[in-house]
Each structure stands twice: as structure tokens, then as C-alpha cells.
Image 1: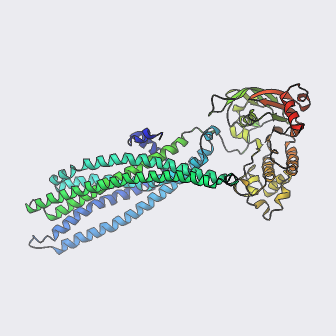
Image 2: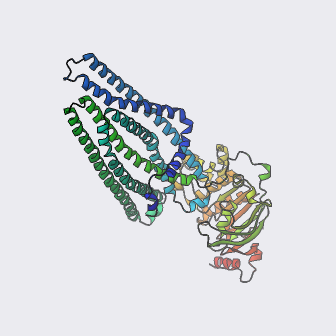
Image 3: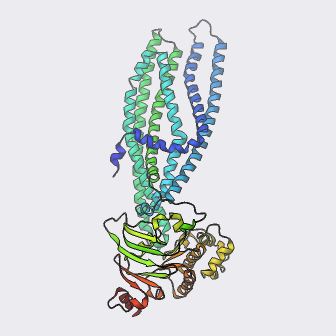
Length: 595
């Protein structure tokens, strides 16, 4: 358990400060929150009036007096009923206000975290799993919901009752108050001791639930692989192991909660028995009225209940601090400077010219391993360039650097002769499109997936893009046409159909620079012909960069760049490279075409 040392720390000011950072989401609703706090204050004070008035009611009916005044009994009874009704009304209004404020604040927090998450750079996602991040947004914020709605209110109410109760106890009987206070340190020590364990196991349970959710999400996303490898029972066991861990942690937490509750009952009721015994002796000696003892006992039980309640509140705050830390970790990550694109400034329009000047690159998670080493090449506007080389040569990394998903470790990438870093990130990416080898489709309709290249595109534009991509012929055969649901990751469509939808998406975007990551490698010959035809139409009049494994697709390229182990080893046309004796391109070409 790597963060056990962190979990052992008691609740301290720095952790609380971090939690209160989230209260900025409550700020816009401060008037409603303040009114809720006011109702809470009034109802807590009304609580404190009950023991006093009940004591007076008993004393008003005291048979030791010669005359009992029924008017006084009725007056106190009516006053108690009035306070009870007022408390009900105030309690209702307080809950309504707090719930409204909480729901709006958490909606704002969820939106803010999602907005931030989606703007984070690729290096953040290299070391995180999707399921875990999803769990942060769902379960961690749900924990905060309880804190915002109930815990804060409870904390304030308990404090008011403890302070007000102690003042009234001292006013009622100093002797009995001192007797009762001797038990408080014991209760406080018990609360502190068990609170530490509850916090530790609550945080561990959150982590384990996030891991279990990750397994569910990953297996459902990769259900085709699970079934193809007949690994249903392997995944069941994997999930079962994680769920058992969650249950074990929950049971450990339960044991500490149980021991804590039992200790609190012993402490609180032990104190009350001692107080009543001492009070009975004082009544027998004529030094106290029965009503005073009743008031005292009720105040004591109120205070005892509030001290026990504070321990629950403490545990809940500990939980929310755990959730807050996870959320703030995400919010503290620096985001990419992306912005909404409405129009691109003339100075940021790409001509299609690209230069790599002595570019070297290492992935942030593998800093010791150089993926690209001293790469230099130039691409003229509207040229078709092919990147060729064995697996792991660095072809896809060049694409990632072009899209500025990462920055070079050394050297510079230029567009229009200017440093890539001088272009606004969103303006740069909005003028490029990629058709990947492994097409990702969203689970909605074909229309939504094509229109992802240009949100808000008309049906006519979507249809025109589909026709150019040779996708219309299969779309119109579906009963629902463009409104056909493609299923999770496009599972309802064949590889060739998915590829053509990805091409239609790129057609609609109308990019200045087009990147094709071996878009035909996994297709049958008929689909490949249709896709290749669509790609050729798409490449016309724009700079195209093609990553190729099958060299038959790149023979017509204006320039072929050959990479090997992160280095540029050859550069030229197909005709030039095929003549290089012992060259890598010639070897790859001979291997492919000799079969």
C-alpha cells in the first residue's frame, strides 16, 4: 500500500485548505447557501431550548409545591409545540436550499473537471487508464455530494449544540458539568483513534472501486477480444479478485466503525449514568429540582450525541478529502492552450509546407529511449510524401509531433517556414486531418461520426462527403441511412466501411495537411480498391503524408522518406530508391514483391 504513510496523517489544515478550494464552485450560489446556514443556526438554537423548557414543564407540575399552575403548564406546552413546528419548517427549508446549492455546484464542478480533462496533453493519458479517470468524475464527486449537502451542515449543527449545551450545563449545575466533562477526553481519544483507521480504509476502498470499474470498462470496450480469446472466465476471476478486495476493505472499515460505535455508547451512557446517580443524590439532599436534573440529562445526551456525530462527520470529511485530493491532482495538471475555433487568422493559415530540422524525441514516460534521432526533411505544399520503414522505426511518432500532441526533445518543426510552436494549437490541428489504421468511431449514428469532421454540417454536406469517400453506396443500403447506429467503436460495420466513414470525416474537414496512417492495410482487395480510390480523391490539392507498410501504395509519391530505428536512412522517389544497392527501401521492396 504505497500511500499508507500519507493516509496515516491526521486531518490537518493543508488538507482542509485543499478541500475548501472546491468551495469556489459554491460561490455563485452564496446567498442561498448563507440563508441555509441561517436556518441551520436558528434550528440548532431551537434544539437547545427543548431541554430547558422540558425541565420547566416538570417543575411546573412538581407535586411538592402547594399549588400547581395549569396555565404555566399549558404556556410551556404551547411554546414547545411552536418551537417544534418552527424547527420542522426551518429544517425543511435548510435541506431544500443545501440540496439545490449542492446539485448546481457539483454540476459546475463536473463540467469544469471534464473540460480540464479533455484539454490535458497526451503525456497525461500515457500513464492513466480510462476507467480510473471515469471513476474520478463519477464516484469521487458523488462522495463530495454527501459532504456538501449533509456533512458541512451537520458539522456546524454539532458545534453549536456542543458549545451552547456546555454553556447551559454550566448554568444548570457546575458540579454535574465537571463530572460529565471528565468523560469527554476519553470519548475524544476514541474518536481520533478510530477516525484514522476509517480514513485509511475509506481511501483504500475508493482506489479499489476505481480499479474494479476500470476492469468493467476495459472488458466491455474490448468485448470482441474477450470473446475471441474465450477469456470470459479469466475476466470474471480478475473482477472477482478486485471485488473481494473491496469487500475485505469494507469489512475492515466496518469492524473499526463497530468498535468505535460500541466504545462511544459505553462512554456516553456511562457518563449519563454517573450524572443521574450524582443528580439523584443532590435531589435527595434538596440541592436540586427534578426538572433541573431532567434538563441536565437531556443537555448531556444532546452533547454526547453531537460528540458521537462529530466523529461520523470527521470520518465523512476524511473521505471527502481523499476524493478531493484525487480531483485536485487532475485540476493541477497543466492543460494544453486549446481554444474554440471560429475563424483562423490569415497569419495562421497553413500553406502545406513542412520542415523537420534536426528533430529528436523521447516519450515523457520513457525518457531513456530515443524514438527519433536527428531527423531532417522538407515537404513542399501539395506534395504527397510517404513514410516507410520497419515496425517501431518512428513513423507514427512523426505524425504525433506534426499534430503537436508532443513537442520535440531537440530540434524544430516548421510550418510555412515558422516554428510550429508559434501557431495556436487549435488553429494548427484544425487544418490537419488524420485517417488512422485503427479507426475509432463513436457509438452514435453514421451522420454524427462523419459530421465530427465539421460539427454543424448540413445533411447535404455529410452526404457529399460520404459520396466522395465511396461510403454512400453502403450507407444508402441501410434502412436508416445516415441515422444508422454504428454501435460501440463501430462494431456494426466492417473494416472497409469504418475506414470509408473515417475518410468521409476527413473530406468534410477539408484539411490543408492530410495524414494517412496505413489506411488500407487491414482490408480485402475490393474494400482496398474503394478506399484507395477515395484516398486518391482526398489527397488531390493538399499536402499528404502517408505511412505505408505496403509499398505498392506509395510508388506514385513525390518523395519517400525511409526510417529505421528512429533515424532517417534514405530519401527520394521510388525510382531513385529502388536503384540504391543494399538500400533498406530496395530490400523491403524485394521482400514484398518477390512473394
